[in-house]
Length: 534
Image (cartoon, rainbow, N blue to C red; front, side, top):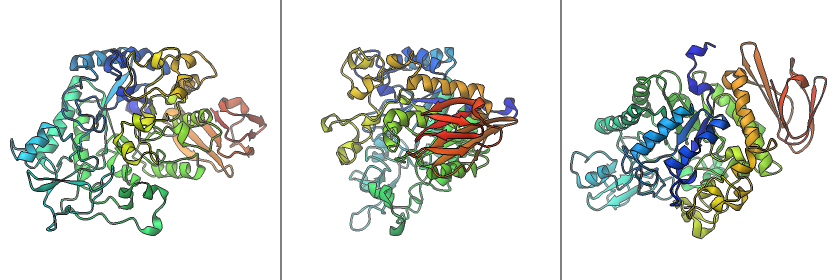
């Protein structure tokens, strides 16, 4: 591979920051840009290459930043545009790139554009998706919201319904209108001109909708599993409200704009119909990369599921994917993959997998500390989904609680004030200051893994090939030129003995989890153990 032709993000580790919960510098209980800036040394020492910031724009916070009220400013919760510029310069000084989260599909209902659209003034009449009710007053079609109920809300001022794929306070922009599409591209240009290194695009599969507003068909009853029944909207096939062929035209406009700025990176979230990632990302016309929820939704370490995902992504030969097991929308992987012996063990196994799969790892804040999901009482719930389904589903607050920095400090050093969400007691004992100098800690394990990626090119840039070594043994080889690395996981609770592929023996052991021994060309693995040979 010609290094000069290899984009920086192929070998990068991207660290996702949920700014509201990362570090609070001014004591108001909410994380901010100054707080993030104060931890740049920690992040640089960890070895990550780029920081993805969840939204920091002005917002009424119905969905905590994913309901944007102004795309060209910084929320006062986090700072100012000047504070952002200072942070950007400081990050560059540490060799860290900055990626901003962009929500192009919908806005807040308090955005001036939507208020104008309600009143059909200032040229915004057709900036959102409006439709007449049926004769009996019911919504235009059967589309369902991700957050429950119909994806349509009626507004008497227009005598029409407006479309919202998420909360009713998140009206859907009409990106079939060229003026709207051009405006959203100008938003990206605003931040590119300011110097950001790229974007993560929220719900990048849902920019365009079916102009005829046809009903989504049902998922056939015989194909429905527990995941479908978890939320009513999953009982539909989302082929008309999102995941449209027309989506690619807007994505190409985004790609063309970003490529004008040279070495910038744009990747997307594809939460539905994961097979479409090969359509919307990679090659010359899609986004540079993207990720799906295929592994984010899984509840256990499963050899078949992981192998299927490796094969599915490998089938898109034009695609360099992103990989992620935790983020601000799902239960933390240390608690979610429950068949491992304990959360700490699950965290190590997940980190080894994340850092050795083909693609760009997206590491969520606290994953490097092995943080488990935090427990949230009903009176502490902030997430609108949690309020709707508690206690059967407690929402997303458990993965969004404040980062623990200093075990002995109030609120684990996150803030001198009362945090917007409580610091988990399970997290205090895993605070950063207890781990950074402990060679046996998950933090040091993660740091060593990231360093190993930088010194072993096959792990960062190589091809991937699965190896069949027997039941419950997940094994894949990464190759680049003559360089080779082997990743070996026993995903059962019982010991296994396997024959190693030619060229691998204990002399190439670089890192292990659990108890593993070697005899000539065989590896003897205890239950839920793993090894990296390179």
